[in-house]
Image (cartoon, rainbow, N blue to C red):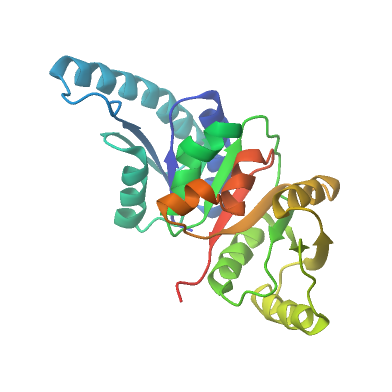
Length: 272
């Protein structure tokens, strides 16, 4: 773990996420690249010099406070204030720097906002291929001792996610609880046995156990189980949907990112 991208809008939620990112960087020796992107609303067609200067000054003023915190923590860091779309700039930073992770705060949403507007956090976790940790408003964390991983026992495209999960669990010395949620159809014993064997191969040396859960929907069942099992983090695989699919069929990953009060880890399935 060498480089963490930390997108920030200087909100209280982002400040809480920065505390988490600093703690994570201290555990891993990673460098944090703090990034603020400022962009005009879509309705604006001309970026006047004066408006650009105001936005630049505001961005740099906010970044000074972030830099003070990073400097005080005694970890390697860089700061960047950039003009442009936040999602594209974060994606570019991840690719250009060969970053290992993105950590950011999120306010979440509900109702029509969740369906049609989304948030930068949800968009980022769908656009990058590295693990993304979101720290929601109202979350409380001291240490990550238990991670609930929502797994699909029928999928065999989770090798990359399990490698990422094992690395992160090892950093925190955390137990991993692998939970498969049954909603409409059951699952045969042989599939469960094979899934446990396959997953355990990736989690050698990591304390882990398996749970098969039943519920009306995956999201609520996972969140309820994580709360009852006193988990400190929820992890899921992030599947990429097209724009229109994401409007009409929000992924479970994105929904949990909105509604979870725990730190949330988005992992990525194998490319093929």
